[in-house]
Image 1 (cartoon, rainbow over the protein chains, first blue to last red):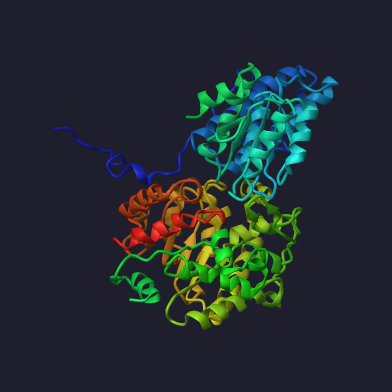
Image 2: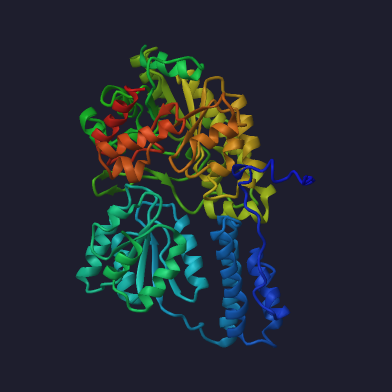
Length: 248
Length: 337
């Protein structure tokens, strides 16, 4: 007869362990790079500055960006997807990464090369920009240039920013059903201006049926989809093909 | 049974003649405003208009309670935050909020003013409750809303700095939670004096979709307990989103009722919180009530009831553009339970 000496799994029901535990994986074999990545993973925006400055003499700024800062942020995205990390940690990590990137860019004397530009905004009348904060952090981490228009942005300002920055895509976040009515107007005006770029709309109140009801609209179910969608847009996929891929 | 007897029966763990249906959050829509000839923005700012709009939940929808107010600014504005009027958006007037930048930084010490109850638009809210009490007497219960400590703290220092502080310097958020608790408690007591039968506490920012569950357990729970201990009438606690990771602790706050969105599991809440907690909730206010039709609303409502919901309600604040027939469909559903 088998003797059971560990009772932990018997008393562990699936719903009794809701806080997922997990730890960050190592992102670089290089101890110096790993140390920088760890500041991002820990969301330490004060410690990361001196640490990056210290290694800028021995490592190239571009390598620090790619192998430590962005690699660390990717690890944060993974922990967030898996439910280990919560929103405050993603925000703190993104801040830390941006401090590091700014120092590296200063050292290079130019901005890091970005894959493409994405304009992000939260709808007019809506101050709930949390979803957009995540989208910005993830796009940044994946090498896109983010033109962050912030919260409560009028339709005209979104359209003007798209005309000026020529983004590969534009995103809109709305938590309230009263504010998402701005989205069809933005879609319409972008199209009228000849900017047939995918317009990713998401957030609390926003559902697929609404977003696919106007031209350019692609529904974003989760903030974490933003990078995959940006990659598609960068590859030249049209809003129609993105809609059929990501929605429906 | 009249509406108040029905709701009180459930709250007292007795059998109602049928399941009640009402909102823990705002249920006002443009349709109701049109019929009541009472509109926003006055409904956010003037007691008479607010009462007229709230009354529509009973007279036009047949809901078993009326609910004021319709925005989340009362405590914050009375604490000194700047009121941001709603903008007229396509389809009607919107919901007001709190202006950026916030009035405090994390290192500041927030102040709870002695004349809190006479500040901002609180006197108009109290007036609305008095008018409703005169109109409804003991026929229909009045649900009056307060805002949870964590959400008020978010208005005082802004949500993103608050979220960061929960990891970087969590002890620094305590003075803000303390003032937030005092504000909600003071308002609740005044609302009860004015005639409120039930207090509904909305605490949107305490959702696990924004903060870590352990932040709720280690910080917010204590202030919510302290608040609910001081409120003499039945209390509803509403936290938005999927609250599964914190529902056990929500059940320890002293709330009589938990108001759940359909993303959260009522059956899990029952297992975690035991037999005494009353569960209310219902279909998704955006994807179902606002966007879909009567049939979908009915199906969704039945699913919520099957999952253990005892009082049917919109899952969160009703979008003002919601079609009346979808809200009426909820009342149809409870008639069969």
